[in-house]
Image (cartoon, rainbow over all chains, first blue to last red):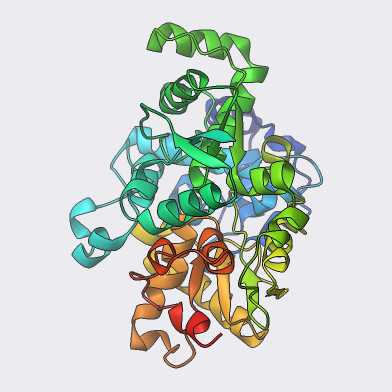
Amino acid sequence: MRVQLSIDKVRGPFVRQVEEISGQALLACNQCGRCSAGCPVVAAMDILPSQVIRLGQLGMEEVLESNTIWICASCLTCVTRCPKGVDLPRLMEALRQIALRKGAAKLDLAALPPELVKEVPQLAIVGGFRKYMR
Amino acid sequence: MSIPYYPGCTLSTKAQNYDRSGRAVAAALGLELAELPEWQCCGATFPLMLDDSMALIAPTRVLYQAQQAGERVATLCAICFNVLRRSQALLKRDPAMLERINWFTEQEYRGQVHVAHFLEVLRDDLGWEALAGRVVHPLSGLRVAPYYGCLLLRPYDEIGLDDPEDPVILHDLVRALGAEPVDFPYSIECCGSYLTVKEPQVSETLSQDIIVSAREHGAHCLVTACPLCHFNLDYPQRETEAGTVGNEVPVLYFTQLMAVALGLPEEDWGMGEHYVDPRPLFNEQ
């Protein structure tokens, strides 16, 4: 894949938007990878949590197309372990919000298995509304 | 002593067994959980974005309702606990946000209510020795894997209930009841949380790893403080395809384990609706 880096992107509106919504400084991350090493759902992700930050640092909006931001369950393991104090779940939330505010819902309620809806605690459904829909 | 209590939505519906066993053990220990006269949903997720304060309205209303009842409020649901404790921490450090939400809700929340988990009440108000002294059926020989999950522990700076990487509060409780806590590597790993509605195969894989690990470390059951962890660990075991037939590991709320050890009647155990029935563990005792 050919990637073009430019100062316009690195200091562009996408980076500012991510930092404003999350309250996190993307460049605080030094890519040590502890978040990716400890992430319990990393196996289901197409790119690593630390790579999400790297793409964000470079201003690459393509990061919104990765499934990683939707697989993150906000378990906060990475927050506990980040040596730089970066709150990665807040960055994931900012990216989800940017994607959701641009377009379609990510949770298809009609497609949920009826037996699951009958049994699942409603806080999971409310949590799903909050995380995957606007 | 009576403590204002916020049950939350799930404990009033899908996890009534947690609510019932919790209230029963609290009453038996002289720590009555007095339900707030009026309450509403906490919102089920703590808002992680900074540019949208809408999601703070629900937890702030709950905190206001708790303020009417006293200086602290106890919860059993680990998710309600996390949402309320984090919201309280935010409102306390950000008076402008508190004022903004109060302006919207037209309620005067003063930002001072202490949000406690019932485990914390047991540890700090009663103490493990005193609890051990109230046990009438010690759970000797029972090997219990304490499963903390995420929201009871993290983030440490706002929750601060226990060490986020090496917690002991459930271990201590299990020990006080005469059972043996089993260390296993998945004790603080995520169960998948609400991924269960969007990516069920991901959360089922996580559950499977947790259950298998607990079993391989010799646990007879898992114990948790969260109704969503409970569901995510118990529900996948209903199916034969899960590969756990004959090897099921019952999943209990800590209050259910307490109800047995404190000698409460079986109705208060609330064990009739588990996918994996835990009662054989105790009938053999």
